[in-house]
Amino acid sequence: MLLDRARHGDGVARDELVRRLLPRLRRWAHGRLPQNARDISDTDDLVQVALMRALDRLQDFEPRHEGAFLAYLRRIVLNAVRDELRRTGRRPFRTDLGDSLPQPGPSLVEQAIGRELVEAYEEALATLPEAQREAVIMRIEFGYTYPEIAEALGRPSSNAARMEVSRALLRIGEVLGDH
Image 1 (tube, rainbow, N blue to C red):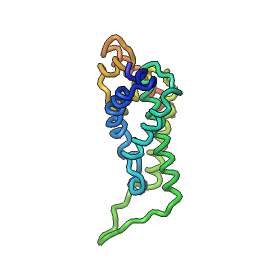
Image 2: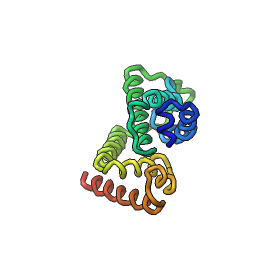
Image 3: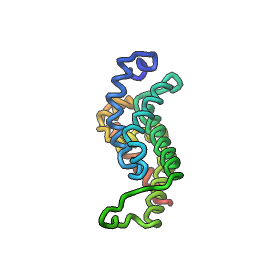
Image 4: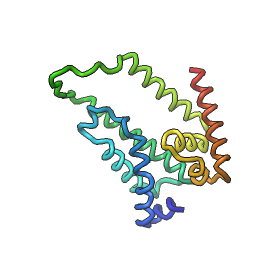
């Protein structure tokens, strides 16, 4: 397993993990960092630094499969984005208005509802068993195909992975419906 080889110091395996995971993490993180924060720290840089830190601590992580590692990376990148938002929130925001005023953004209520929905999703995701949570993260957030999910989670077929994702999404829907 690639992850095991990287954990034991195989540089080629580590490079392969970066090659596989960095583009998916970048796509996932794109847009999660607001424009005013991106002026200070580009999303791609934030993701790359988070991935490198995670890889430097691989010996502390006990993965059962690739999906567990991807969920672990997602949490690290999400925390890095949140840290960056807190850090940039303490600084005044500067912008050049140019010749025209910018279009108004979402209202405070719209921002709160969006944030509330994301928090509800995260809470619903946390209620799932680990394998279902990893399957949802891989499919919905990272765009893995069902055959890729089956391979990463050690499922016998893409249909088994599809069923796991379907059951998990139904559960998330139930939890969100209760909010």
